[in-house]
Length: 56
Image (cartoon, rainbow, N blue to C red; front, side, top):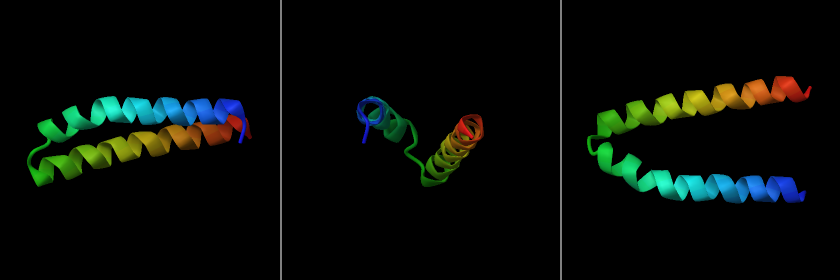
């Protein structure tokens, strides 16, 4: 693993640690939580696909 990848992973984990408590406290209803989680999953998948096509 390259240093850039390790630093990116550490940065993403740190951002997740900062955002996750607020995300969980505002999504106290299960239906709302699943809806917001699916929106974020779609956003992340779109970003991954865009990065994949740019690097190719």
